[in-house]
Length: 354
Image (cartoon, rainbow, N blue to C red; front, top):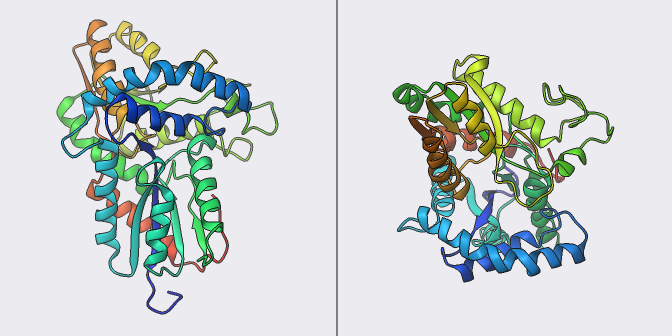
């Protein structure tokens, strides 16, 4: 360790959550989140008009009602699970490390987390965005914000940025470890792997050739140099790895994408359209895993656990089981601690992305 007995800083980053399940707090959160040009990637004026002329006039009340359905006595599930992970990883790593959690939007904010690491006198910082698959809207935005805040500080310790981990063996095995007992108990006819969606234009933007991503049917069959930053291809790679780790057959699982917003085309197939297809094929007991999320949140608990569950029963399905996310499961805590230890052992004098 450099810097004598100075601890190594670890910054875990997730997307964020409102401070309360009320329209005012949700509006504040959405205003910050959706103002980010990496999230709504259209010119500034149309983005402002869309956000302030439509989204922030209509969405906060509906979103607040959804948040209230999953809010706990301790607060937002995403934040509660994130803090539990922070504390468990800190315990696993020991006194040689200082671990903080920061949210890209909302609180605890990234500036506060960096300030806490600086106050602890860390020798360097390992940044782990908690997004398994790379997207500019999540990973890219979080890294850019941390790097900007970091560069503004007078005393700047070396920063190492850990990239996507969509097929990292410890991540895959942790998710499989969480899923196995649920699948053994539930005995599903099929397992749907549902990921957060992205606009198609954001996927195409990662393909510098312009002739691969969403241009050919087999574009996501493997991750190579052309599509190494393609979110959709990484989601399919995660799915193949999880299917193998769980000992499932190729036909036992399928992939879909949820949470689309607006009228522009998002990556397909859509989860809410995949459910009728599965029901029509004879599936009655459906398990759903959400491997784009390392902590349960609105998109898993409400969108899948409640809304998709209702849709499934209306389609004639017998039961839909939401497989819990990684949260602060011991297997995930061990995985995160192991990933951090591997990276913290390097000199890391320069910021490394990916």
